[in-house]
Length: 88
Image 1 (cartoon, helix red, strand yellow):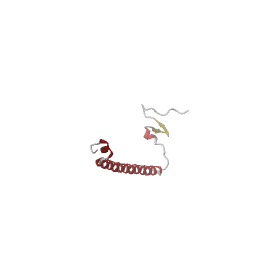
Image 2 (cartoon, rainbow, N blue to C red; image 1 turned 120 degrees about the vertical axis):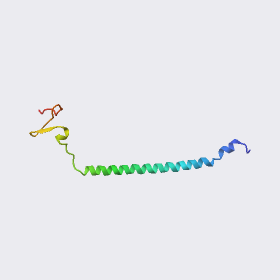
Image 3 (cartoon, one colour; image 1 turned 135 degrees about the horizontal axis):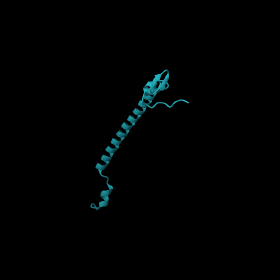
Image 4 (tube, helix red, strand yellow; image 1 turned 180 degrees about the horizontal axis):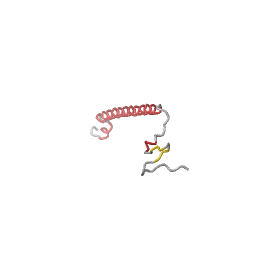
């Protein structure tokens, strides 16, 4: 019965288990490195938000930054530019 094909199928080949073990080890390291990178990105994000929040409340930009010119304390658009709608 040495030539019986069913006996050969029952024995697992050694090379396949070695390759599977290497693949599991490689996959494990990829998962660990990916997890470490994601944690690092999260910590850097929290630090950035903390720094930005510590600067105080946001203020609107000055009218000059939007292209408006102050004339007697009233913001007006330069010639040819669209300005704010008139009040009232």
